[in-house]
Length: 285
Image (cartoon, rainbow, N blue to C red; front, top):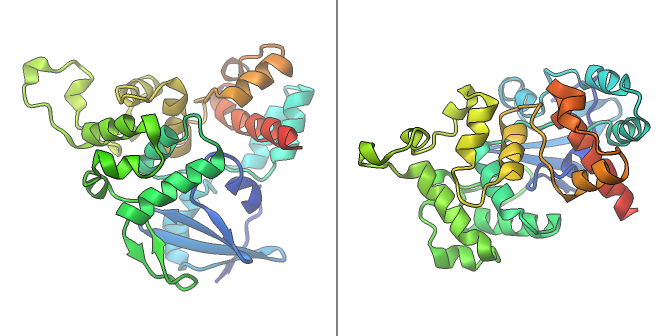
């Protein structure tokens, strides 16, 4: 089946944007996985060939790629601020979209991401999928492992996780699994936030930004940066801004201390993505 996509859409930039770790280019196709769905997509002239049905494209993959948001319009609004570095970053990153990823995969992946390179993150995530995720066969691959469900992850032992080069992140992942599955039996011992334990990742969709970020940070090892990553990349909070070393450098070296959240408001998270991709890309040179 072939489709047209007229808005910003660059598969290479999406894969290399730093927001996702499992998408791959396999020969002339790009593979994306979300929950138990796998998509293979390739560009043929001005159209895209996709491996799924029209129904799955409309219900699963259009939301995943955030195709209901007009990124060309957002880029115009960003460029009106007339900051040359920002405008250069937007032009460099044109085609990136903020994916609506599975919250569990995003949470675990960004816990793993601490002080790891992107290739190392991808390797560790794949090891978790290979060890605990369901194995399926697709039209193009004889074996693909889905990201494990929370029930599958709950079977992981400390030794299992240590064997995946996760180092000091192991107790953080264990704590995340526990807080996503464990009830606190004594109501009198619960704080207001703990009354929502076990954390229901689906229900977090209804939380305000403040409550969403605060709840995620109840998990050991999840600070402001990781919480903002999950909020932006899974809950589509486009006004959440993860601050990592690349963004800090850009703010200090190129933006004269500009606060992206204050400067760009409702779409500051997208601006952060352009700046991150541009700053890291310039460094790779």
